[in-house]
Image 1 (tube, rainbow, N blue to C red):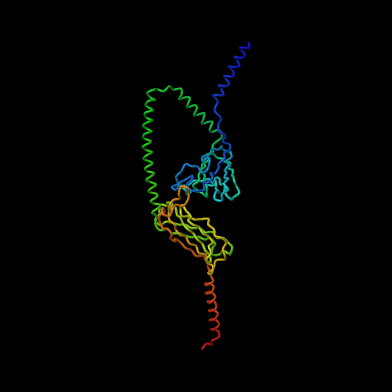
Image 2: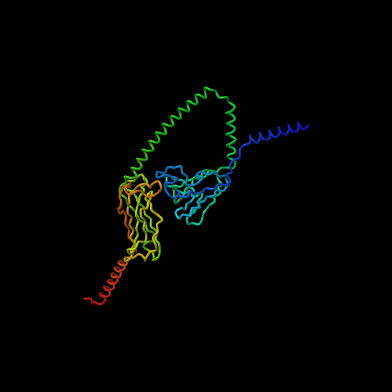
Length: 367
């Protein structure tokens, strides 16, 4: 009796163990995912997109491709306190480094000096949501939102197909032919990859030639409210630099100096700044020494320091590796009130003259 009981227990244990072995493995929990900005991503060339807008496969956000269930929580984190290390998590797409938001979600500035280190988003619609950093547009990532249980269904389908394949006994001749076919395909793929690499190299050389040979540069300086500013105010300065023969809109990778002075004192200076596409924005002067006037005008000068992509660490290339104009002033702008003191003096003289003529006409008797 004892022997039978022991045997029954052993058989029961074996059945339970077998069922456990056949049960599906545990699936990943996608009810919550945390995405972190990689420190140092603010340096162009270290991760994300390269100068041609191609993916370098080095992530600026980790994980670069995140998965979450509908109704799950996406936590976006940036703990970098470096002033230049502030980033955004902004949904949107684009072409190369030119990207635009689509208002699905936007964290605003996180990290740096913002005092904010995280942002949460709860998606309610399945789909693929690409996102990027508005401050550093080469930083990109993707969030895939799936219905709850999607992975389990895919696993069951894959398991069903695997079982059906196992039920068929392969023919040795078929296996040999398949192996030969795979080898031929691998050889063809290697040849295609080699051809593609050669084409990519040729394209890069052509693009570099287009970018480097650029012609005459023109710059438009925009100063919002500069002519009405008061002493102590800071005024914003935006500059747009265009290349005359750059009809295709290739990135010019301009290096520039920008200096703003008032009464001989420097109120803004940028040395060897870099712009991918010629747009220079978000600059502000120091507090003005006085309201702009004929005696205290503001003078802004933009000087070209050549064109070349940044080095791999994001730093400026040597001057000898740059092309185009170096040390050439491409734009100057002087800011004075719309009606300066000279204009007011002319107006005053005109008024006095009119009054004098009127008075004379009344005094001199008519003949």
